Length: 350
Image (cartoon, rainbow, N blue to C red; front, side, top):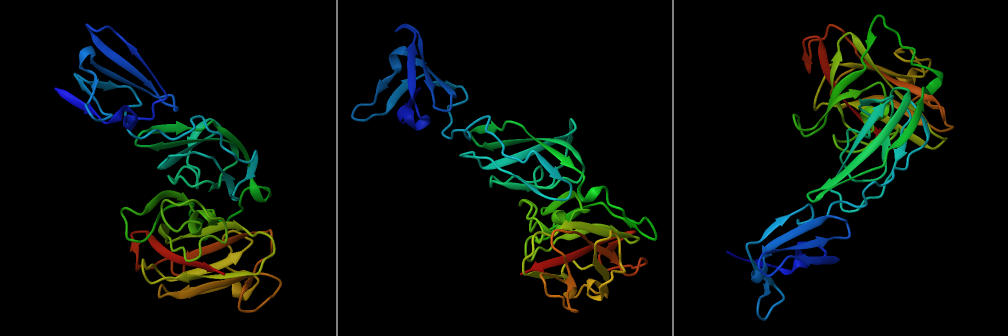
């Protein structure tokens, strides 16, 4: 059989080749690319020739072997560095950046004190966009790695280590009665699942809920993505959500939450407080009670020097909780299944 090879350079960028063999045996042409991948072309010694009137090579009995014979080179460089802070605190996102060319996806992995763990914003994202904002929910030493790939192969990062300490001076102090705090849930996004799901999300952190607008993006720290509409899929009827966030420096920023009609759930109580699970905040505007899922506004908040009775006033550089519970622990719906119900809450900010 005669096989036409459309220029060897169309197989891969050739920077060097050597020919070994005799006129009585097969010849192997060794090709080496700038990416240090190899492609061996084996052909009959007498069958390799130029096609008359062209620059094509024609050969008989051709076989190709090696990692570099495809037309797409793997991402570069291999063993690329990750840029990450040496230290971080739980509940506050930290940025990890890198520089890789030619990748179509990048998958992160994380070890905590030697064991593989989920690190929100890092291990649950496949985007090639740098940087990513990761948020640790547990203290300890995290070792991060990133594998970037395309159809031609992959490149792997060097590890980066981040020492995470407990934020807020210690663990959250949350009441266990009369209701308990729910810590994890699947989160669903439009269009309707099963495709658009982030499973097993740590919903103790605000950024993990409203810091995403879909199931594949990276975390956007508080105040998050304007218009984010996650559905928290399983909240116990006798549980509450306490999603912790940290305000930044003083800015003129305000926003509000809405109990939306699509992905509807039961009536909600919402409070913003510096205390976990607190549904009796000192400011009246920081509490909304018995709000139906009919595109009805929940709490309005404001971060600036203006104190208004219409807004829940937030202090810069402080920790807060968005506390959420079903108004009636005996509710039967909508969005309920047995002892749990879902809730879709939209977040806006200016």
